[in-house]
Amino acid sequence: MAKNNDIIIYYSQADNETQWVDNFKKFIELMVTQVQGIKPTIVQKSDIEDIDEKELTNSTILIPILTSSFMSSGKCLDTLETYAKSLSQNKLNAIFKVLKYPVSINEQPSKLKDLLGYEFYQTNYESGEIDDYEDFFTIDAEKNYWMRLVDLVYDIDECLIKTKGETNIIEIKPSIERKSIYLAETGRDLVVQKNIIRRELQRHGYTVYPNHTLSTNLDDLKASITKEINESALSIHLIGNSYGEIPEGSDRSVVDIQNKIAAEKSFKLAEEGLKKDFSRLIWISPNLDNISEKQKAFIENIKRDTASLEGAEILQNPLEDFKNIIREELIEKNLIGFNNSSLDSNSKQVYIMHNKADESEVVKIKKQIEKNGFHVLLPEFEGELLELRQKHIDNLRNFDVAIIYKGKVNDQWVQMKILDIMKAPGFGRSKPILGKAIVGLPGEAINQDNYNSEVEIIAGEEKNISESLQYFLESTK
Image (cartoon, rainbow, N blue to C red; front, side, top):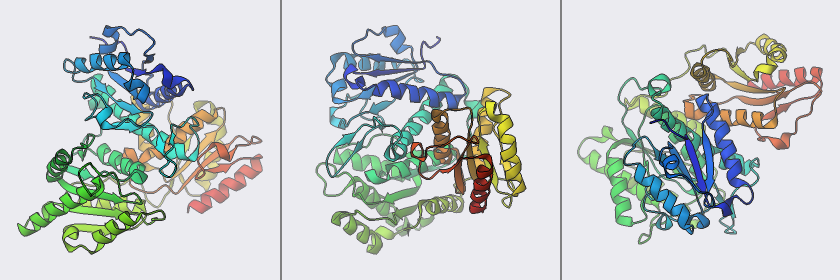
């Protein structure tokens, strides 16, 4: 039966007073269109509107926006229950729970408790205030709101691909069966970094645990962690400033418990002479500026406890270096690592992202870049949508330097391209990005405040643009 909608976003009307849901829908629509190559059918429905049961249950994805208002709305809960029942008849349908404000696992409907949640808010732990990002282009929003949106969009993409029977066209299939990897839950300060690594592993065909919300019941929590670590050939632990959440009935955090269970597995295998069957990588952030005494003691214990170090390698280096070590570990353990670009590594590659309307203006920039010894990657605009998308993904994997050309486009288009660069690790990049810049039309100013501070702005008169571009290219060498 044909689907009425690809996605229904369902929410309490009280949560859209500042158009938060309207903006969420707009961003989802833009990003799914960009990833899929075709515009999805997305509708939003609130609890003050009637929703046809057939339309609801015949839609591929339901995204409930969870808040206290949603949880107190009988109509919201009834609608969620109706859709959840339909999942038993159609295994391709899915629910992606979005949290606009904190809603504890115990407060959530039973159908949602085990699902991974996408948190679109940030807690200030000093003041206790919750920020739900009404300003979507602050530095904090770029690091948190947009990265979570990227995760959500790519999970939506995979669901829609399966529904439309297109898996064999664009899925990157592993050459051999890959084993599972346990990517441990972290403190809140490292959630973004953990999700980047998770996405990169998933894009290479690995099963990454945990793939569900961890239980708040201590016994169930330990049982789940033990089961999934036992099924994994490698566990990865990221340790930062935050000690992490402490389950009820425990004096250890989830971060601590996971490390202890992984250490116990390593110790047992070593005693059995099977040490090579499992290894652990523990990354400790080099920037521990706001660390608590409890977390400080935890880290010191990890470093000096011989039992907890069994089968583990501890590193305290930049995250990009740690990701390279993950790749080396996967290769060494015969778990298959990340493919490096087959192109000549001596010729650095510059990907110029531009709109079709700006093709003629990009020619001069392309010539200047090539004169400096770089190979230029360009987007393609002719051909099948899926082929164009795959070409874009290939470019995101392989470029060394990214340039976004802001010609006959608006700020929103540029923001989407910046997000493409941010999510490039999810496509399997195996090297660092050497430079990012936005180049403007001659004579037009570009406001740095509108963009990520790590992106260089090249604007002004034509001569100044040429000189600034030259300096930028030299700096990337």
